[in-house]
Length: 233
Ligand SMILES: C[S@@+](CC[C@H](N)C(=O)[O-])C[C@H]1O[C@@H](n2cnc3c(N)ncnc32)[C@H](O)[C@@H]1O
Image (cartoon, rainbow, N blue to C red; front, side):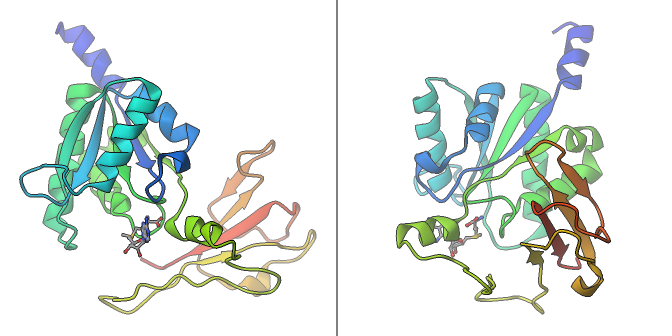
């Protein structure tokens, strides 16, 4: 490739971190499908050391999605032994970064929703250190969690009325820290009583007048407001 064209190709790099939902292609979002259309290659984690996808649920969903969309994309295996070893995340991040140089627009996929016990945020932290440009060109695509799909399957609400919802790791490796999601505020209420921490305020997301503030607003102006007090990491 000519030097100039190569540079433009590099400058147009994009990384989509795509949530696949819990296993059924019908629970894949339109946004995930758009990312598959827009990319040139899809990085798919595999627990198999030989990089085969025999046991990979993610690979099954991606294959079905590409068939559904009637498109072909390069599939890059990413060996992910899932043993919580930082070296593995570095290797995975290197494959993603390398793929972005080769294919310009790439996806990395994860099961369920990326925000719930997924390695993608470890990878993004490493990518931020090693390749800030790619980090800034990255987008996380939300998905259906295993527990929202499970609740729907048995027609039982996860929380109703004044109930709250707790998600706990069954085998924690260290002290459990909590992320708190605070919903259903009253318009005009003061937020002092919600406490302190790593707060974000989300108002009207994906709606007109969307606003995301990396702090807790003092007074609620809209009903469509939620707060996340992220676990201190
Ligand atoms: C590493 S976590 C990933 C969670 C995922 N990101 C989500 O949003 O549901 C893996 C755990 O999620 C749950 N899980 C994920 N997919 C599931 C499925 N299809 N059926 C039942 N449990 C599932 C299981 O508890 C599993 O051990």
